[in-house]
Each structure stands twice: as structure tokens, then as C-alpha cells.
Length: 246
Ligand code: NAI
Image 1 (cartoon, rainbow, N blue to C red):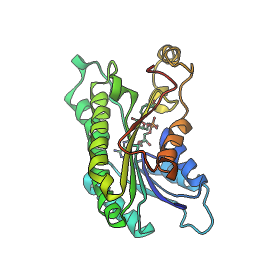
Image 2 (tube, protein in one colour):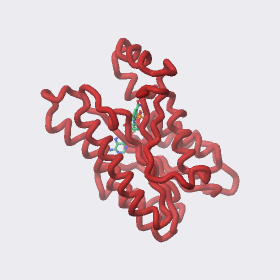
Image 3 (cartoon, rainbow, N blue to C red):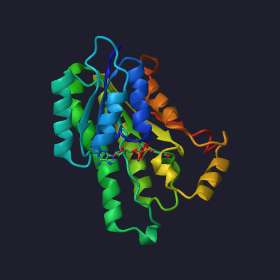
Image 4 (tube, protein in one colour):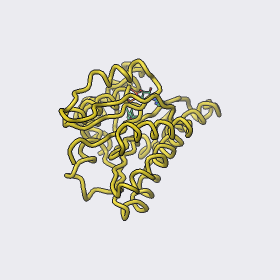
């Protein structure tokens, strides 16, 4: 399908903005849905606009708030009339060892990484069901599959996202909606840049390809899973981690 309408949450950030560029370059219309307005709008302004399309849109949203999510989706439908792809990419970390993790850290991460995926999926569903087609991609993590020290909250959400992905794939497959997850390894964005250099070097040593992933490596996985080439791929978790876990 040419000129898909692709909603990417957290698209002001590292992976999301790289994905936005890749979708735009192939002629899609991208909705940059993020709570950071200035960077999000700049991302939209920098995107390639394909001829004969309605271009791109920034919509400010807090994915952890269902009213905000519903308003974002209404806004997109008013502007474009349909939503072909939802990439649930927004995510945060609030790391601490289990014995020191506060309830606030637990709930902050639950609200964005887990509730946010639920709210966004639920909000786009009526339009996708009416269209008879749709693609949902949820961003999990290597940490959701294997766990990680200091990330009880984050790992729990990223595992839960896999459970939701498989459930939605079973429920919605018969309705023409494909649902998959991408589980990135360690990717060169602000999320990882905050780690001490020594830890980053240790991480690279564990990756068979001996490098961190680039945001585009994950963006390309989103683009692939949204394409006709992936039309028989449903309910899977695509691990994109340079061989970190083999
Ligand atoms: P990032 O921190 O660069 O970008 C995240 C974006 O999400 C930001 O633009 C932020 O404003 C937005 N966001 C956060 N809370 C939000 C909310 N409540 N409502 C709307 N937008 C919100 O992160 P990055 O690295 O680009 O991560 C993207 C996704 O990939 C996340 O789900 C993350 O958990 C996942 N991931 C990242 C990995 C990495 O190594 N960078 C590894 C595995 C998964």
C-alpha cells in the first residue's frame, strides 16, 4: 500500500524519529505522537513529503493518559481519515535495584510502557476494524525476554508487551489486523547514552557484531513489519540485537 498513514508514538526520540524518516522516505504520511512538542514538531518539519500526499503531522500526546490518547487518535482521523499503522514506540526507564525501587518508579514505567500500549491499541482499533485492515507494532526489548539488573519495572512492561502482542495477533488476525513486536537490543539513543561508558563497552563485548544498534536498525524492522513483504508475519517478536542473546 502506497502512502500509508503511520502513527509512531515517541517519535521525537531516537528510534521513533529514525523510523519516522524511513517511513516518510518511502512515501508514507507520519504522525509524530509525542509529549515533547518542540522536538516533535522539528522532526515533522524535517521529513520528506511525497507528492500528492497530505504530508505529516505532529500531535502532542501523553500515552499514559487515555483521554489524551483518544484525542490524539481523533485528531489523526480528522486529518487523514484513516490509520494504517500504529507503532507503539514510546517508552521510558526509571532504573533501580529491586530492593531500592520505589512504587513511584514502578508506576511511572507501568503507566507509559504498558498502559500506554494498551490505550493506543484500543484507541486505533475501531478505525482499523472499520477499514478491515491495520498493522500494530509494539516495541518490547531484549530486557523483556531476558530480564536485566536494575530494571524490574521496565522488564515487566516489556514482557507484558509480548503477551499483549500475541493476544492481539490471535484476536485481530481474523479481522485483517496484523500485530507484531520488535525487541531491540542496546541501541545508540539517549536511553543508552545515559549509561556509564564502561558499561557501554561491556555491552558491546556481549554483542556478536561488537557494536550498539543504530536507531535506523530498529526503524527498518518497523518498516519491514509494516510492509507487504511481511504480510504473513503475525504475532511474532522480532529480535534486533546484533546477536546479543545467542
Ligand atoms: P528515547 O528516550 O530516545 O525516546 C522515547 C520517546 O518517547 C521520547 O521522544 C519521549 O518524549 C517519548 N515519550 C516518553 N514518555 C511519553 C509519554 N508518556 N507520551 C508520549 N511520548 C512519550 O528512547 P528510544 O531509545 O528511542 O526508545 C524507543 C523505544 O524502544 C522505547 O519503547 C524503548 O523502551 C525501546 N527500546 C530501546 C532500547 C535502546 O537501547 N534504546 C532497547 C530496547 C527497547
